[in-house]
Image 1 (cartoon, rainbow, N blue to C red):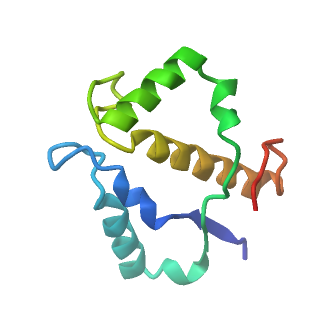
Image 2: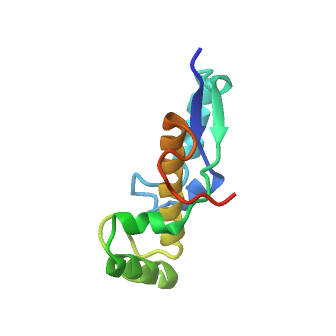
Length: 120
């Protein structure tokens, strides 16, 4: 049988754009409950996102954009695109999502094949 990993963090619930938005903090809890009801959890290995260097986002985003996102994250005010609403802490949530994606890629390719600085 193949091993299936679920990259998961309790902190995913912090990504919550409000009750009327599909990106609500309760969606992960609901997904886990559904997996459990389907008997899928016993076949999964849970992995926390690996802490990696923030420099990974500099490979894909302009430094000015990153600074604006950090400003929105610190103040909780403003709006910088559909994926960066004016909420405190959005930068940390974004980094968690990137870390989860990188952890998933490394799980498929083999540890640290993505060539990203890992902090353990």
